[in-house]
Image (cartoon, rainbow, N blue to C red):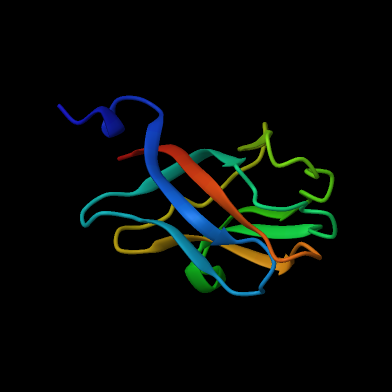
Length: 125
């Protein structure tokens, strides 16, 4: 029995995620034959203040499907905290299909050069 198919679980931890540069960073690639249903992202251990980071987008690579868009992390100015981003209530999301990269794209990233650790939570069907 694969826990990721029977519960919401941590599917990936990605270190050194660039929180300033406007470029997609793959957080998780959906295995063949599965569909990914994202539930939460934990942003932690940022190397600098995320001030200025007002628009982070999460979803399938190249915008094929979206999850959470325009996430504002600009008040995450301490490097010892963590921020949880959850699926919103009463919102319909498109599941992420097999073989697709689930990414973060800092559309308006932090003012300072900054990296962070991101944990990806969800389940597979």
